[in-house]
Length: 485
Image 1: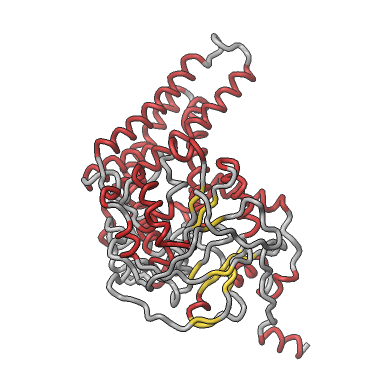
Image 2: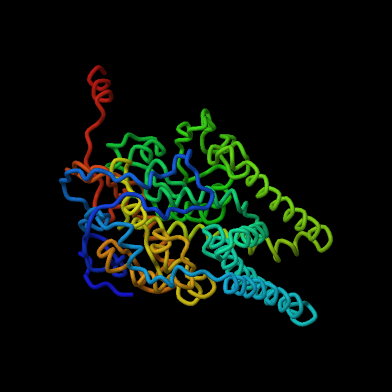
């Protein structure tokens, strides 16, 4: 993929910066009629009214992304997106889906057999060499395991096959094998798709606002422009923590998800907050992430985890816990790493907007994602989840093997709002993790923005990269306190 229009240069802009295609514009749209139908939730925060259209409001003030490129609100309709996609792209094949599952399971089994049979003291006497080879084993199995995770993700979106029973059966088995609560994840993930880019309703990787970031750092919002650059070692430490335990923290404590649970219409969220012991997680049927009708599915997810935990306990008891760590748990951490890296980079980029409620709609939220490139690994082992994510957010029931063609079809409709960064291939993907971590620390509005534009927020940082944060005056109460002093 290549851009047809060049991005403007700006301070600290890298050579491999994100690109967009040429612009076309049509008419504004509200939420689509195709929002994920699995596990529908009419009572949740993230449910949509697919029949309502927001009233177009006057806009003023220039919007600038973190690089300094001017941004205009998307104005195409979901119908235009769907109509542009060839009908055969919507066709799903259970046989083809099962073939990919068989391929990934065979890859996992063959890799284990080869290493267990040949990487032994009898065949390789050098301990360092064996250790290095088994390290390679954990990385390879982590990639194959991530591929299996992606296929279960397809099942959750009902893009695996036309059969909901087959989808949920395969998804439950595959995700349980990877210690993922299938139905619990499926329900919350569906809500993420229904509210992508919404600062109060999205379910994952919601950025901190300027006030939230300043409060976490122990400062007032106006003081952020005076802070010194975050040292690279701090950024690196944060990234390591995110990659090691980010997925587990999301499941256990809803880290990076919205924290407005008191608005849950069944009253489940009263007194509950994100964090350990806050009552918000993916394992408790009474969690405000779900509705009363979801209780049996949450318990079925927990049963899958209990069965897998029992299997792992028996393996560890009979074959040794050190062996189990190498065979399963270290590859499991690699799977978690790739899952977090992929999701983080799909929704975090200096070009991506986030929206307040008065400006958000489904089309705008779906467009607030980005495609990247991870070469052979991404397209073959990980089933294209990195390269075709934008299309996936518009129509999540299109199977991955048709997503490339469908992506090409929607590019002319999206115009400048189709975002992609393919520079550097796999290395460029990894480099983007560092770039986004340094440039995307919080979101804030753009100076002078009014009307709908006032509800569009972009990433800013205190590292001197890209558009600087707005200069702000101290709050009135702080001025008064200083005056009295």
